[in-house]
Length: 110
Length: 423
Image 1: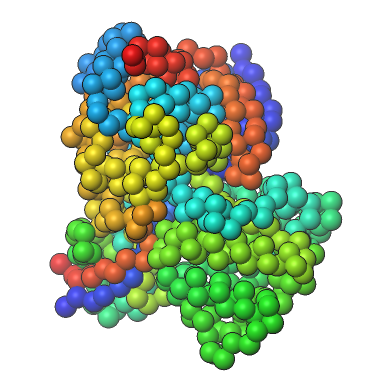
Image 2: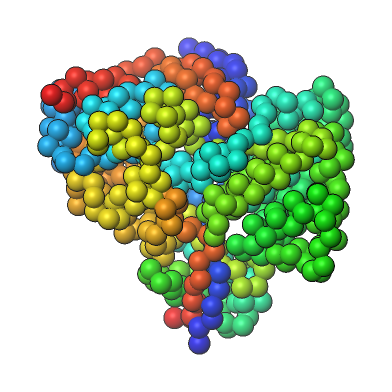
């Protein structure tokens, strides 16, 4: 079973700490390779904290551990970084800015 | 023997906090006080030891690396120069000079952070002020689509929320704080009012606020997920405050509408000046990304996404912006200055940097240095090199080094490349 969500990407304190440690560090990799969603959505998808889910957009797909976040139902958050960027397209609508926030994404347990 | 430097500027983010205390022991930074976690990381994780440049991963002499970089750029039909945001204005000037000399495309990290804000400024103007005015005068603060608690950690205490100022002697108690975001964050915890907007509905909410400020009625019970009564209350607070300031971030620039969202906020702020004093300041991320806009504008007339291919500067967001140029595989060589597009570009655009010869100038290893053909490990401005950076409110601040420089600066390396390129 898969459900549709709105995906946003952005900074987190952990991503900031990992960045200083080095972007090839395990700390940075772990900080940027996760997806947050609301507890309600986790219950609806029947997934638990740390379980791997598949997140898919029209650009690509990634498999990430899920974490409960302070998010309204229907919203997904992935920290900015190389993993999130696998889901982001290159269309900038003549602004130079890719669509880093507000993408439609599908999530399913693996 | 240790030396203590006071009032050091941290050039990690656009706050450019200038009260940092740095203790240097035996040529290394031993302790950093007053800085946030990001600032401490900036000072303490930088290794100032000299590093030789590399070509294809092989350590070479500086002259050989400069010659290889110049050869790559000279042979390219459409070179791209990108980044500029974590270096000093002195180096940014050299980057523009190099772009002009090569007939290159030059773009800054603004295009993936506040490029849409630049477009909005060009469309509707910029009702701005300095952070000093915010600290001393502002009694209403609106943070829209930004999370300073994570991205600009000392902003609240130094410039906006909790600091005491000339006309705000009680600090936090003299200010009303409003946060508009799609989700609760560390910043919303500081708010008197948290307005949770639906994703991609900022433009509608801002338009409704403009209408309410102008005294028009709205029949809908809610706009963009926010009850109209709450918006009416905010419009009233905005009109009756003594001095309001809006801070805005990527919640507006990276969502549907992009520059139109920002234009609507800037227009709202401009219109509020019919009733009171109101300003807006973009929350600039990298330490000197505001300087990159300034330098490129005073040298070419445009803030980002500029092509010198025709011998004169042409402006083209979407045409000459780095993500677009790379995604369309138009650039056949790249020089990346003080930024890490391999970590922050959509993967399809980043991949192009692996296919073309790429040159990187950076004090730190990054995902982009890993794929670069030529890497110059340069000095870090504000740590072991002097320079100038622009704070998020456009105030230039001098960066003084706390360590003796043993590495060449970005400015010096770019000057050598310029000397070896062109006709």
